Image 1 (tube, helix red, strand yellow):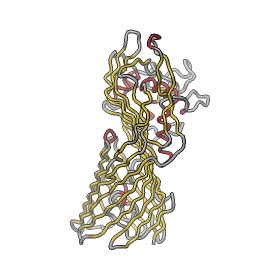
Image 2 (cartoon, helix red, strand yellow):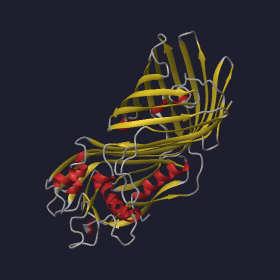
Image 3 (tube, helix red, strand yellow):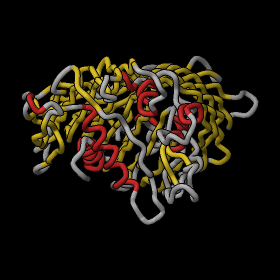
Image 4 (cartoon, one colour):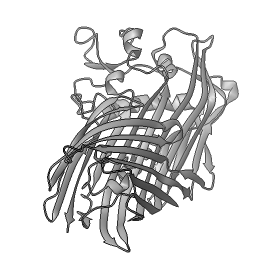
Length: 469
């Protein structure tokens, strides 16, 4: 990518690529009895069978969720083909009305978050008075939170003052080695726990706090706020260049224009635990609860950049074409936004701060399941999930119907309402003797653009295979 703050995003993406994203788990399968990875959503769950996952194919999870997406930012160009040869444009295009341009954005914070997980190896077996699991996995999570007022400012709706608020972006990737054990305490209660060793690959955080923009007399914006970018990635550094102030009497200044990654290695180490329990009230009702990922990672390095001053001049955001119909890639066009973002953030290199310790984000799951007395092959379940992670916190309620028509076949469908949207999910779990295959979605994939980019930011896919005995 060109020199731009997008290179920091590129480093964030490299973190993701180096790992895979912190898997949320397939919530659609929480009440699927023979789903081998239920212990990832509640460590108290065991399995009737021993299993070993197919290396790197045992459990692949990709989830994105948010309350705005591609279709809210990219529009058909109203000037095409007579006034412009650009087929697509952005919401900032002056020929798109303010009402239409901002209609897709939430009046509060606009967030997109993603989780991707690759299970490199997983095994489960009965021993030591209970059920035991060993897992090696690669996890990454990323997110961005943008206030509505930022889009108003980018569109330049005519105001002379914008109180934008806080802008947040984040990505983290690590490898995990986990040991789990669950056991039956009595006829009603089962408990479980996991101990996790975390090997940090990288983490990047950006926060631009209390951002305000005022139109100055020279038709430029005076932007104020405190920006801090922290990147913990082995061999990472910010690249600076010299630029001149608009006022020649002020001389020159250094600004971050690029990033560099020299080599790759382990960036940090940490630990976490999962705790869970399942309680059978009677033959018809069962309740469960779990807390996941209570832990931290201590990073050995922390390259930091901060804005040069609390107030600075900014030319404003300008619309560009997204695709000009002549093979110009979306990534190349994104660099143009990155150049504008560099000026908006106004960062300077603050050097290596010598390390930091961060949490990884905890998840709370509470479930209740009802088994039909007249037809034991069908159950209904209600699952409440809450992710606790600062600006990226979200919650969800999911109601499911689960069916086991055959001994080797089960699955279900469900409806969920969460902090971002309403969604439908499903899971199919096939487990004849010696083999297990599952596939499921917590959110059905909707329409895609011609560039194969989902129009909505909500999508999900989980798939995996294991050998059983």
